[in-house]
Length: 373
Ligand SMILES: Cc1cc2nc3c(=O)[nH]c(=O)nc-3n(C[C@H](O)[C@H](O)[C@H](O)COP(=O)(O)OP(=O)(O)OC[C@H]3O[C@@H](n4cnc5c(N)ncnc54)[C@H](O)[C@@H]3O)c2cc1C
Image (cartoon, rainbow, N blue to C red; front, side, top):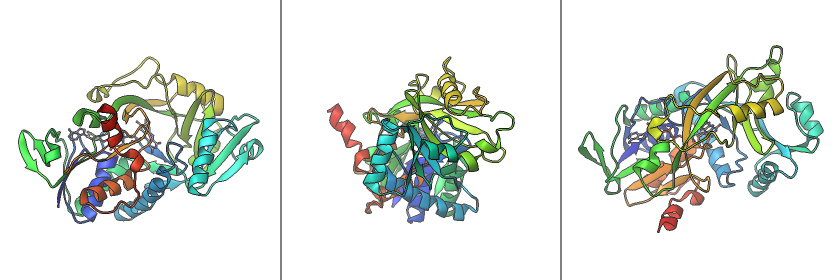
């Protein structure tokens, strides 16, 4: 079967890899250079967590993803997922604690529940309230972001895929299996569009809005380095004020990465307008949250880089078949990297017509088609 993959970020490169491994004749198209920094997948790291408060159905997806990441590490010969363990912390009555416990109960995923005293004993660098509850995910960790995209693309090529970079294609007729490359038609049995924040522009009616965000890094104050290493701090999600802040400790030679779950500075953007874009509010919220929760850090970000993701009104992915020959994958809502390997497998299975290893009924694009009708 001849399959086109349009977009070779984290989701598309993993899809090309899983398709090629399943024996498909894969042709991938990427508008930029594979691993470029104008989309969603760039930068050094992303968080890996299994306690996905966004939807309980994402827990098996995250677990399958970790298995596939280990396979990719073996094929690539390099480490890509560093397990540190992680904790989600908030007041007992917060949505973060409530939803984390609900997801843990619904899925039976291994976890530990700590009170404020136990959290302070294990994470003394965190400033937390006396009524805080912590839910520990021992399998949480840090994914190497750009290296994973490059590793998946290289593994896809080794398995026989043909991947074209600097090739922006037109998918107007993708429902008929047609991809236009420089005005020339190429025909495929199946087309998968995994174009990140461009997905809504390429395939209208999916409810995907490109949204600008930031990656921000922080330096520990002098003498605080050991307390804020990846090994010691691990992966944290903390409810601070009315917001959530996520992050991880510094890997050797790196910095502490922190970001807010949502921010007034995260605004809709034309996806080609990202490079060099800025907003006067950039970094303000995360600086304030960092000062409140991690006093051992200098709260002024050491570095900031624009990034973006496709956002949907219900914050869920848009993944599934929308025609006999067309499958789409977008709307990552800023939490899709950890799932990329299993999403790649899922998209390959949908295109090849085999039973999905992890079904994703809640991501079906039909919900937006129904709303638009
Ligand atoms: C700041 C930030 C922090 C994040 N942190 C986390 C985290 O800690 N954990 C987590 O799990 N997730 C996180 N995410 C989300 C995660 O990074 C994304 O879900 C993931 O990278 C999505 O990858 P993608 O392949 O869908 O998109 P992209 O990487 O943007 O790939 C889409 C590709 O399609 C290409 N393309 C577009 N149009 C065309 C065309 N016409 N022809 C050919 N190619 C085309 C683009 O050039 C692009 O390379 C974060 C996201 C951001 C922005």
